[in-house]
Image (cartoon, helix red, strand yellow):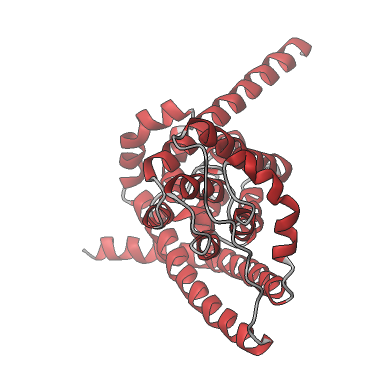
Length: 314
């Protein structure tokens, strides 16, 4: 019993320094981005930007105001995108398309920072997530029934809150978010280290092995894949970065994982919430998994061709 308690205590102690460092970095980044978006909201700049790209949304079967929901989710998070989405009066078809876009490329600034820490190319991730969102929206507009979307294209309401009220609203929501992040980040990192210490990680990897083989993801990335799918990149960042720091995965393994989770993560809470708003969950899930499948195997092909090229040169 004492040995068990000592092993648990050692795991917790080993996790705390690196987790605290990552947690502080994530909180600073999240607070800065959300504060910047609060200022954009106060000065009513986001609706102006959305009007510039809204004409393109007709190719996705969406009204122009959907651009505001997409941009809000793109730069902040899914919850912010949802807050705008519910005001647009969209039908199930349009909600499914718009939700898929937001799920594919939300929280761009924060999640790009996380992906970059794991070794991914920022440019590649931006292109994959942004163009992937547009491609999936275009495809869904082609294949989903009821192509003549008649959603009301209501004008986005300007901000009417005084600055101090808006600042107070931002501060309260940010404090709640930070507290949630701290609990999840420390909890996940401690859980990850305990699972590794007691051999459960290998068991999980074994269970997920057929799925990893299908998606083209190395087996040693199974836990990180699971974390990204359950809690997302922002909350799961510390657990992923801890695994990287301990050298449990190679850079090539991480790049393959990144190609998948860049467009397909947060498949529990966020998917449930978008479904509650009227989206079709299995469409939003399967089409992003299909894109992730293509991206990983394309990346594997790149590695294969690169290895053959350098083998010939040597």
